[in-house]
Amino acid sequence: MSSLPLVFDEPKRVKPPRHLADLDSAARRAAVAELGLPAYRADQLSRHYFGRLQTDAAEMTDLPEAMRAQLGAALLPPLVTPVRELSCDDGTTRKTLWKAMDGTRAETVLMGYPDRATVCVSSQAGCGMACPFCATGQGGLQRNLSTGEIVEQVRAAAAAARDGALGGPRRLSNVVFMGMGEPLANYKRVVDALRRITEPVPSGLGIAARSVTVSTVGLVPAIERLTGEGLQVTLAVSLHTPDDELRNTLVPVNTRWPVAQVLGAARGYAERTGRRVSIEYALIRGVNDQPWRADLLGRLLRTELGQLVHVNLIPLNPTPGSEWDASPLPVQEEFVARVRAAGVACTVRDTRGREIAATCGQLAAEDVAGTNGTFVR
Ligand code: SAH
Image (tube, rainbow, N blue to C red; front, top):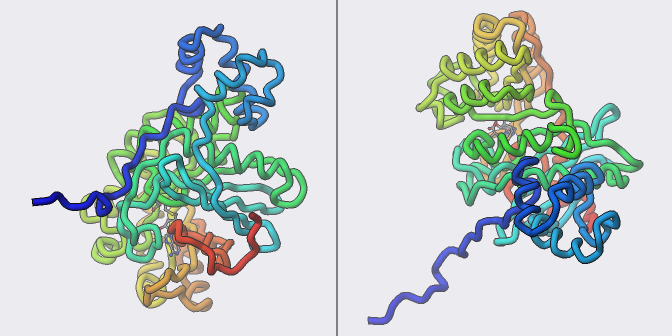
């Protein structure tokens, strides 16, 4: 009997090669020493990468010429290659579809506001959490992204902002882990990336920890572990409804860690860091937008988190094939008013990137050839 042809096999996923951004300062020195070079070369290389956002070793002219190619090949392999870039909102929202060395695709979105520039990064290719209203959740998980692949999204966005991608030179000020994937399901790589993003140059990119937000479906043990890391990053919890019955369907992992446990872990994080936790609530017409749910949400958060909470309402972005839609404006306004009446801060998120499928929950790494918006490249 002949064996089945191999063409039916999944493409083989290759582990991304080691990159400077995967390593802490000590490991970088060790890696440079392995190449037979003095340890201070690691700091020089790090200044180029994290400080000048430079990835081309050939241009690192303070390194001896013979050393540049060797260091570049060993520590700065091109982890992510842009496949397509799209922009909308007058060039202030830019989505990059990129591919990793094994062909895995993921997306990153850069957004310019008058007072800040924010990059929304992916932590996994795909996502295993299966939330029914989210485009990424429909395709399942392909793989975890490496620390280097996560940091590279931020570095590339910082370089693009600096070089005028948003119109005029801008400093990247904020990072949100709200792209593809569940960051706390890729815990170690994400926490390493948080350190690289927030540590000062030359150790890291030097972005203020409080300007970095990690958004989670509510993996309770991982939230508790994060509480112990001593990081001052903002935690966002995707609650979407205050009651377990509905949350079991909107965020399936709720059957494992129900609302009370999630809010308990969030409170632990808020108390330890002194930082307000952000509660994400995608408002879905006729599903989770009833006045009684707003009242219950307000009461619950007020009791569990007091002043250490802020509700971020996200008008649902309909995803292809879903019958769900955003709530009508008057319903949304009443929802906000009721949450506020309970003494809980509540704002509505501005939804950028609609035309280019770059807005919350729409990142699915599809081939975007048919999408509106402007091709940047
Ligand atoms: N896995 C993380 C990050 C996901 S994306 C998490 O769930 O928190 C960030 C936010 O976008 C989450 O709150 C997510 O629930 C929300 N989101 C997903 N799909 C959406 C959609 N179609 N419309 C509005 N918000 C959506």
